[in-house]
Image (cartoon, rainbow, N blue to C red; front, side, top):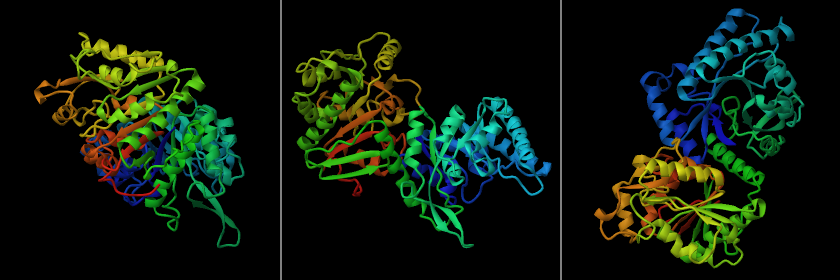
Length: 546
């Protein structure tokens, strides 16, 4: 599951601020509803003309998606002219969604109006949905009706969708809306099934209304009466892989907490629930770190020095390997190759409980033109520090001397796809790179799993600092590397980053924007990753507590 938030929760914010906060807090995308208190999104300068191109560039640089473009279109009005206007606005939103690469738009049904009946209202909604779905098919996007109003219950939503003859029609399932109408969340997936294309999550409590009755009021997720965690469980068991979007109704309830508090709270809550659902309990080390905190979805531990950092990381890695071996009979692991890994690798190979015979090993990168006996070879590095000491089931190395570089990338990518690594062990470069993906070649939307990249000068200088080469001119200018999207797709990750040389990169990765200018900043979005630092590498990080 991917996480986004609706800008209904921060209606006065600019798009620039929305994207910055989404990146920093570890969200995968944003759902556009309001920008600077304006909901005519298609007419805004940053979403039309030349501004649209710059917005697409910003989204790509931050590795963010637009999960949904929300409309203000209701199709319940008895007046045909009002319905035509709503449909026209929805059509404009379809065009915008297609231009932004968003998968769909959200529309409403919504309530039977005075002078109308349920059958007529349903007919008007079906008519509008059919026309929009046909247009959506031509645009390569979808139109999703929200479970809301008189059609909040799953069966009532389905009564509309069953009459729309298009795969481009689906539902934004808002189980809290149905909960207010007395429906249990389990009904949604049972009744709507694969028609659920996007999900809204919020939490609610009953409060006393001014007229003497009760009303539902939004509260921070996990603090109310709505079983939000159960909803994520239902989606997980149903195999849902789309967006779950936090709908904080600040626009309609200005008295509730500000988005500066609500948005970080939600992502921490959701990350914790999703980890539990994935059977990924948090390990409690025998000796707790000196300091621990979260950045977005990324767990960060700061240890006093390199040896204690290495021991703590090795405990986590060993536990992950044992867990995979117990569950699957095998453990496919990607290893980093750099001096930053020395203490962790030494502690890991000394652990007698690691089931090495079940380990299938890969590595992140290798220099082009470098053979396995070269002193700077990453295959040699791992052999000397690990595989000469323990016997693994297989170690698949990248052939740096391959004459057909594209073919070698394809061969290694096929091995990765076949074995499906469950754990990636990472470092972070002095320039913020992951693997050998330096800032100039970083693309958070890269489609390849393995590629040949140009190494920038800061990266090549680091190889001299690390002792792999005597002079800058000796460092190869190209290398094979796993890509950032592939690394982010590995279910679990541990990044080991000690030393003063990494201070600036870690400061940028944790406290700066999520951007290709610092590839490691994307780790804040990983669903289950831990970053291990020592006091030296963490020296520039803003100190907060978990």
